[in-house]
Length: 210
Image (cartoon, helix red, strand yellow):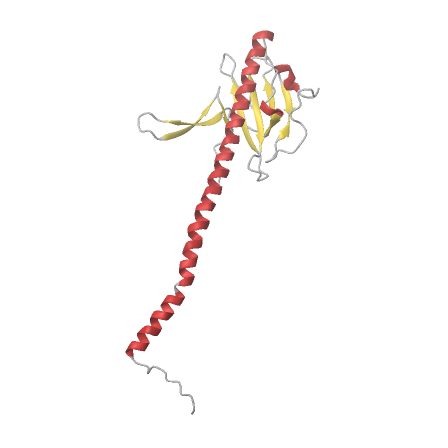
């Protein structure tokens, strides 16, 4: 006998079942995408936050080294009666994401006269000190590229003389550094130029965007 296969007649019931099956099958792709996004987005945000915190840490390191050098200059002034001018050091290596070795035994390292030696013997930037003709004012400059975008950023510390005159630097032409403070009246952030403090030479340096 010939096998006969019966099919369910097409009607409103079978149409609804077919639509339901298609919907169930089609929902696999959107759900998979949603799950993937739920995994990828937090991971991406976590990586960005990690990089941001890392760069902020490097930014804080630059400020700390500038203040360290400034303090060493003040101690030198108390002993010698004038500040010490120091040429750029380290003078070898490429400023970028990689740290640069700081050799305190190097005769070309003018910071030896100040007794400056960054922690770990490594640094992210190159540093120099420019002193006024009378030796009564100085500016410490840091040349950096901690985010590795091939765009150099400049940070400084300006110490004025008793008359309030500062030593200008072509890489930090505003005559001070940009600092952010909180206005006590409205608690809003305010950015202004300051001397006697370490900071970026303009409002762009020190800001990181991903």
